[in-house]
Length: 452
Image (cartoon, rainbow, N blue to C red; front, side, top):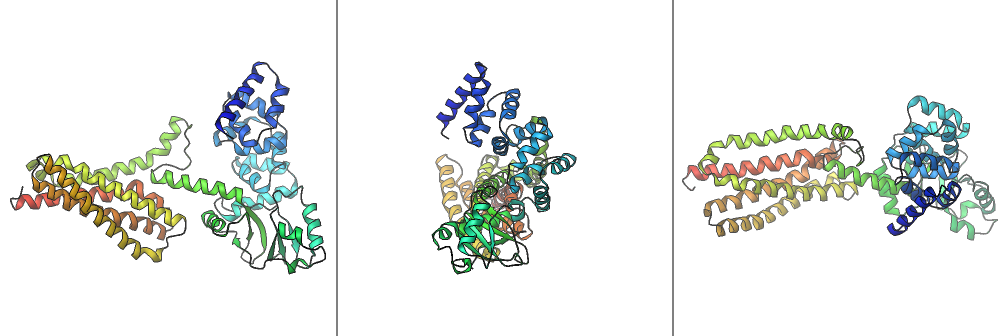
């Protein structure tokens, strides 16, 4: 919804509150999309949030609570009654109910599972066993499946029968008598077929499916590659377990983007902008401690060349230039490499090609930028030998940046770690140490030979 419409809705909400027209307020609120209701609730005080939320029907409330940010959702759950929570869960699809129950304390989750319908409770408990970041953790069990010997007419009747339980039916899954997936029929193709035709005659036997244990990033890549709206989830024996829908994949893509963004910055992925200062400190301090340790490693390189710096104090002026340019170049390399890994464009078999390319880029950029830095130093009236130092050390450090920025993410990928972790500590340490060592080391050689 456009920002101006949201502001207009907020003004209308406030007018209802000021006139104490609770009936009009709820009628107005209930006609909005759940995400817009959640946005409005985030712009009123906490007491009014709960009061409005409790007046919503379970069907509307079940959609709204899923659209809330984590802090508001936890606050609402902690205040509403178990009965209210159970009523909302009964309105949710199994994947959404599983996500919500998974956020509850163990004792409360058990209590809620006992309160919802037994069939749904069994499904949710089964889904809770799958890791959240896998296809099993993202799938829902609501789907339309028919036996391979059904007709088109029988299949259409099954779609109608399941319409109240299954939302957004885009495909009908065809299974054998062992529930193994053998085909898929798009809904538009089903509607256009004649009722007496066997379903196996119009199904597509080349089904794009995913194993229940597959990582959510790979699932998202498959959705993108095959332009899917939904995808079947199967076990190792090919038996149909559920489906993943595109709305869940949109959430996965958003989560993965921000997860990489946070990790490149050395942040905990659970931190949010409205967290308390104490929580943010707890989230940020571990990587900052690691950064402090690596900073002292870099400082030890500078300490090693202490006498060199004393001999030519001007060297200290240009040290940040070398380190800063190396860090910037490394960030560019990391961003390209991590994106390639995330999208599946880059695999470990491409390592040699990527390394050669990034070293070549580092060499070329080093020559261009180093020459520019040397020219600026010369125009400022600084000894031209320092300009040569800038040129050679810039080339060296940008090559190091290309190597570190490509090797470290690939090594982390090899060890099943998140490649995005590389930027915050490891690569910048390499470029800082490499930059200072090349610049000050060359300076020491120049001084030894009387060139400075």
